Image (cartoon, rainbow, N blue to C red; front, side, top):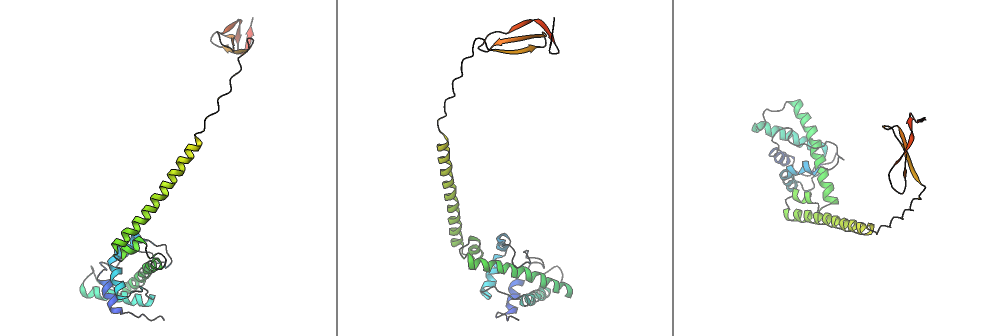
Length: 213
């Protein structure tokens, strides 16, 4: 069993001061879950206090369960919750919340190791000026990418505006070329010079596509 080097009772008091109800902390209970800074930041004051008491923020499961059982006892003594937890509820509370606490602590430690200048991490531990600088750098990088993309798109538009080739001139229609059709209202076939002009109608009637004498 991994021995916890910190003071279990002290950590229980720290967590109890932030635990407004038994289900106060919402986070994944899976240790390798995707990091969700939006659920971590609302508990910034808790993690600042824990970091002072135990800088590594590494808690074995059994130790964290013991810590949270201590939280339940403190809350019962203070009448801090609507009602005290039963023994069965206390065991369930300790197991469930210890998984959430350790999963959140792991997310923080992974970010501390891989991205120590990450904006949300700096904000979590109250280094507001560094957090703002990190956010500004990220925003500047995003804006630079957008500007480069805009220049590339303008270049593409300039290249695409090539002069259009003139349409080939149409060959003039010959005098003996005609368009043909049928006027079904008049029941007469007609032809019209391709070069332009008025229609010429036949002298014979047409019905259902057949000429009638």
